[in-house]
Length: 165
Image (cartoon, rainbow, N blue to C red):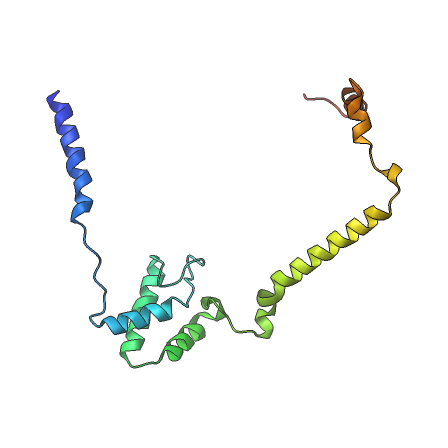
């Protein structure tokens, strides 16, 4: 009984530790500089996570890139210069909104082309089916109305296929 009390007391004490946690202090002493760094890194993709911004990611590369962006801002570089530096170093992939260029045309217009292609295929298939004669389709309603007809149809369809081993 005494051991159970000690274990429960330890669990209760461990559960109270988050109550003493504090908000992480920003690394920069200047809040304006920190806000500018967050704004810039929110527009850049984490190269490790790829679905998070550099500002949101906890990957070590993202931490290094935030530190590098902060250093460039402290040197007096403009937002465009910081983004240009990152783009020159890591390519257009680091940008969440890459520019429209010959190399990124498929990225920008690929989803719309795939949607249009899928719609065209759907229209073609539906038009072909509408031109087919009515006897080309299975009459499922007639088979379902007769007792035992579904089982007979399945048995005749599976007659040539081997059963489970």
